Length: 214
Length: 214
Image 1: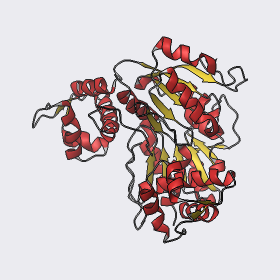
Image 2: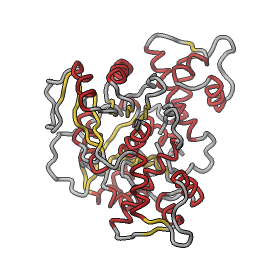
Image 3: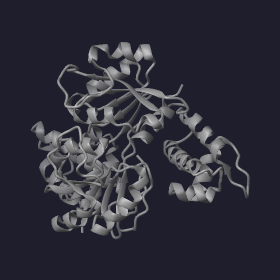
């Protein structure tokens, strides 16, 4: 998927490497579930769908470890990656825009086991009747700054209509949000110290569409 | 977002260019909505968040057009891109795995205006009670091949649990699906003539998490 985000100043690990670290972490989790305690770089690379040279290069950011001929310790490598990604403890996230997609993501249980908890939702019309019960509170936009500051929240999921996305993004950044997962189909203009990852489902389908034509 | 997909044999336009064409198409749509009929490469590039040289390079795949000093005709360029992407007419898509996320995507209205219609859903347990009404029919997995073949469907959205994703993907490919939008957090192994685009929301959050650490 496309990314227009700016790199955080002073960050040393490239963005694509960070994505691959997430993949390695998931492969390692599966190995642990299967009771496997060491893994060769070849086997881990294959599970992650990358070349062994790529894996070794990516893990070199952690300094040298792993024993030649024995491979990596699954638990130790998981912990190193998880610490680096900042997901060793549950991270609070807010969601802004409780429409159809927002509502779906609020009730999606896939985030928590990956280390993220959507703690609150915000909407221009928080009291509108919605066709699904969710456990998170829905606040009005005027309460956003207070909640973000009080709870020290840094990340937001943005699921508002394209027409208001930039305005809401500005609001988020003012409140102290520095990472935005943007589902609105527009390119957000943000300052360099804010990171935006874009998820555009229609564009993904369109991309598939091109490649599936005869 | 990460992509592990294989390029379609014989395709001439690179995958990243195809993604950018989707972005240009959306920028052009907004220009049309605002009654603007011509646009310079500089203005279009800025709206899309790319460099003008990149834009000109991408559009060169369509041969030379656009008039120096006058820019591109918004309507004509939209049509050329849309034809190339195969989204000039509504394309049928199926969704497999009607859990929480699948249900949300079925009721998400953002796809149709982008040229995609989810015409049917499939689930291992099609009759299970779901907490949301949807307009699409839900079929059992045994009906998948028939529906795909009868309706000539090429694309599928995959929202099944990771544990069964590979098995279901194999089933899809056997039925004739050649493009998969995969939401399951695993790397699917498919033959080279099948395209997989991966959307992994947890990995996007994890990536943001790294870049938002202090």
